[in-house]
Image (cartoon, rainbow, N blue to C red; front, top):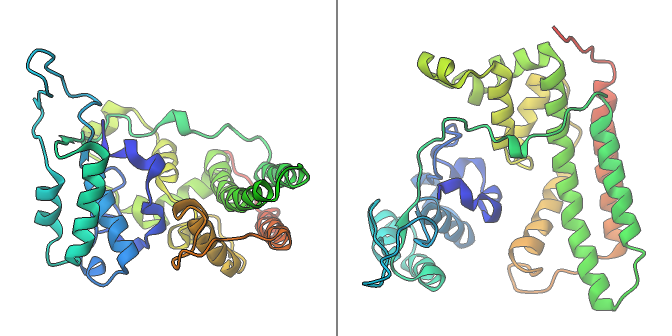
Length: 320
């Protein structure tokens, strides 16, 4: 089991870019910046400590042999590791003791005091075709996909049920709408990388995470990957609501200026409460998404995406 097995449940996407000490390493486990961590909010400190541990240690039931006769796991790859030792060794003096104790208690409750090491070796083929996007023949396909998703969400609002069910439905649709916009941004950049040689070139030479990436000649031959494959792998690694990473792709890579995205930042905060705080804000008050608020988000997302599509309308596609 490797560090990226936890990405499906990870809260790393809620941390700012400056939280990552290794933000240009697209393949390694999360390493928080000590400078940022010592000044971060308690909530962000908890996320950072938790994700640091889960990136390095895992449930031994995953791939650790079990000795049925004697009872217990055979930690042939190292360990066992106790969160009560590993977490203080890394974070004492950087975050309050209460944060350290809280995460230790969480980890003990999750898998006890005997954890196995996660496999942090970079796989030979770090580009995962499982998460690849389907080829899009039309430039306007990302916008069409977005509109189709929002249309489906609007239909769900008409379903009947209890008030509690309707309240939950609105919250889930609010979160899904934020995700739909993230998908639109990814699909748009992917289309231009996949179909336009100039966009591919500009992204490689202008985006720091790609321009400064060091690749050994032996790895190039061994992996047999084209520059396009490496860019697609980079796109897979991006959290598409982190505007500091997304804006350069559009502005430096595709040559357009993103419209005002203030509304998206506010929507992300509410989505965070819905997804990661079980529908409650930091004061533990329930989040209640009104129908009018959801309609407004539908409109804002559609207008934002349409403005991007409009700017790209006149851009020529150069296939070779």
